[in-house]
Image (cartoon, rainbow, N blue to C red; front, side, top):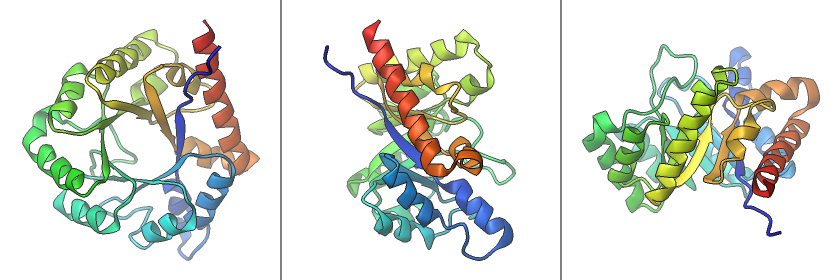
Length: 248
């Protein structure tokens, strides 16, 4: 049997920086976490540079890019300020996400359908520099089609509703349908938000999913078992889920 393609695992390091910033100073350093992630088998690093700089800071980004050979996926709002930063930094990838100052974390997906002209302009600027652009969207057909229309080659499906639904098969069906539609349009499909050891398997088993981006759970689990062990366990569960699905 030919082994199936295993989704890449991107490790989001935002909350290592959140812990650092809670007290000030240099510890814990997200760069050290990136090095550990690389050694533990992560395929990439994700960091969200927010307008309010509540966790990752501008100075962290070039350090993260220099610390390991892992590609950096830079999450950011779809603004001219952030586009200029990304163009100057030239990370491997940029993921455009919605952003509100009052939120604790990214809530919901980017409304691409409702802001198509503006997002198309930002996507075009980034595409022209050779940065891989993805759009963080809800698993809704309208948003998938809009992402394709504005020229983004990649989408990342927001798995928050699935993660909070406690096994509701309807949310997994929404993810499956969105992933199938996106792949049919020629988009690369990623997923993330709220994924844990207990719920990652069903998403990882979807054959269209090429990458999973996971952060808060891994950083939290690191308190108990260490970051390297948490990443290795997550990679193992992702691999087993895809292999089991292919064998059925």
